[in-house]
Length: 262
Ligand SMILES: C[S@@+](CC[C@H](N)C(=O)[O-])C[C@H]1O[C@@H](n2cnc3c(N)ncnc32)[C@H](O)[C@@H]1O
Image (cartoon, rainbow, N blue to C red; front, side):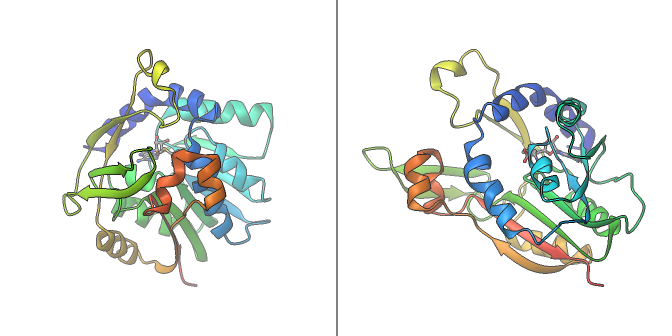
């Protein structure tokens, strides 16, 4: 599947995704994944940054709130329209553009840093997207991104639960089966079951790669690998937001920070 086809899937998801995520239904993102990502982010105050695959822009706004001058791109125009509406209502100085991560409309060495929150595993041509991120960074700049953990969220994954519903183990399969746009169909876990019937599920093309594929692609793009993060809910968070309790069994997300050495 190519970027144009991937973009059409995301365009179809965008309005409902924006509505649900802004209603607080993306609990993994808001309670665990984004806070952990921001905790790992180096200081960005006064720097110019690019957010790749920004969606409706909530995470871009959090980076901008750390006093970075942000530009952000997404392949789906409806996501960019929602992000621009938030910017118009409450300006953070963010410049949004519709663009493909594999064909960034910026000159070489434009940005001090780049981020990509949960978008790189959705990009059809990840190797080219990594090369593009490298190209638009200034020497010395970093690229930090989060993805579904390649080891613990391969094409087949199932939570195994105790009799009272608590996650106790994870069953995984097909780790070595690279996918090229197999479409996953799902709702946010927090969308109440009784509401699901009337709401179309998200359809998300997946491009699963192994851990060694990711390392090879990052290095082939020219980057040095600087840091990994694997967010895990602590006991208090798991008690407050049981949806994320399964991250205490094995990580669902992987955070990677790369450096374009100066
Ligand atoms: C899981 S969503 C994450 C959105 C946002 N970063 C967030 O954390 O809420 C993945 C995003 O990647 C975008 N995307 C997929 N392929 C892309 C590409 N080739 N170029 C730019 N964006 C892309 C989708 O449109 C979607 O907004």
